[in-house]
Image 1: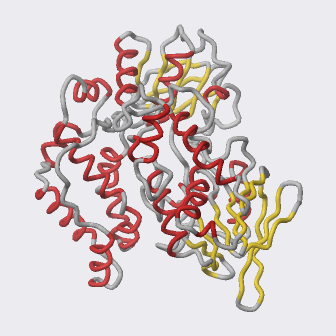
Image 2: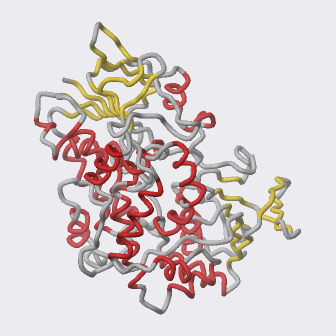
Image 3: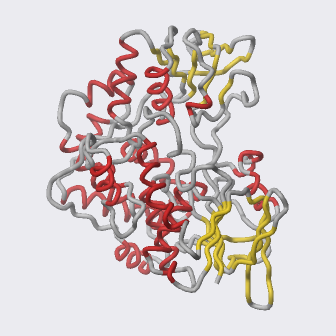
Length: 487
């Protein structure tokens, strides 16, 4: 049997690890892996870059081994004892080092072949009742046929709200920062679009590495910041109801769908059982401006918030299954009424990065414009706010988040664009890739669900909801390999 994995960042690495830990890599099969990048297993997020870019999850939530959730923590304690292996948010490059050390030996196994080449097309081969797959790279070399195909085709491109892409001194995608921002000199006036995790990355890097003489401008239409990751909850085990058994039973009761109100009621019951007062927590920690965020978090303990974050961690492990049991109407209602609040408490900022940004602001080395309206690209960029003020910048750096619209993939991901165009992949409401659930099986225009063809990664965010983290990808890879891959 022959298996192909196309794309070998964290998602692809998680698939190979799942093949190993499940015992299926020992079977009579050949695994061929295709990726054009120089650094296998890390992708863009964890490759060679500045040590000032931090992960936003505790080490205990970043193991690549589905059978040992503390593997990265133990590796970190052995290799970098200066970090607390339970609570420190470490540089991304350190996780990348772990990933390469853990995965590289698997690439050297006799039945694994790694091709550092870019796949540009994939064909479905049908013969009677059997389905197989053939690949073609940029040099027109063909590979296959393959009995099973895993697609792990990277992350979506960044948004381009102000149609600046292609303009001089506009940096659309800022990673790796050591390459993309290398030409910024001390007198450069820098404007950053966005206020999420990427903006904090950029400020952390620029303030530590570039000795800027001009204040950094943060321009956004969202005048508040996400919650911070506080030290983890250390108390007794939390009550948690919405596991796979609960989901299966509730779905059977309701003909496959679980009403959103039923989920909310069960979560409320769990919170009460755990003595988590969500109303009080929201009064203290709901979104606010940078100064308010800083003063809320620093100089005090946060045991109640830590408990809520621990509960959300349990919930996050089942988000994909929960989301896919909602009706279309309830999915839309969730996004309208709950998604923003949930994201605020699930996607958390690194405290050191927030403290750094706040200190820069108090020292007048950074300012925030919360009402950006438009950007006029002249000799310098003119950024205009709703309050009528204008600001000049020599360089504009984009930190506005992912664009999941499949119509705008283009040159960012030629293979994904090609497979969508030819109908081998279908989009889900122009917001990512459509797959079956929970199998994560590709659905084609011509053949419907494709036998033994799977997709994994951030492009499934409209199906595998909340999957933009290592733990979710590792869990999904393990589930696919153990339950749905036929060997």
